[in-house]
Image: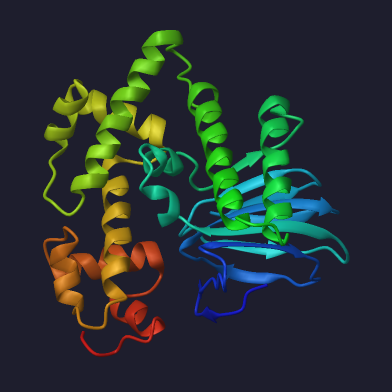
Length: 290
């Protein structure tokens, strides 16, 4: 399944397909801890499949759906026989769609959907995955456009259900809760667009209409991470795109990605990607500038 593994980083090959890769994995093989820039969806069809993410073990049963955002370290353990659908896709395909980027971060480090715990949501998502697989392997005209539309529909359904039900505050219900979500998503979208600039928490709190400390508490509650970590994740994502260019030095990438110094950039990048920016450049064959 893993074709190219450099250290802990897997490079996903989409071949002739436009940023989507789907396959039926039947291999009786375990895979070491790794990460990739692609997002991943795993759904066993026959027998179980075990995944460890962020130190937590998930035993998937047939029909269970596990969504793993990009950049998450994970390990895979296969039984002696079985079959599972594995879908990997380039997140940049959907990041340009308003709201997707922010919503996707709510899923970290992963999201497990089972028919036992969420029958309605599972009943909506499973057919979309199976239809995606059917289109992907077909010879139909416009099969890529069809698979892409189903992928969008998958995350629209997931995002709406997840935002409305799974992330409700234990103390706030109804319209107040929805108002909080809208405000926080507005802040997330602002950070997405201005991540390379210097952003103060007071500025974000004012945008949301909360006090500084109330904003920090609410943001972490809903996004599952601090505003600072969220901001750094987007700066790292921006830096990854620049590091691939052999004509841009690591120092230039650091300054263009919102980091105040090269040591800070090196430290933050390594904490997220488990390699230095220079090592990341080498992984992509770009050795010209450091």
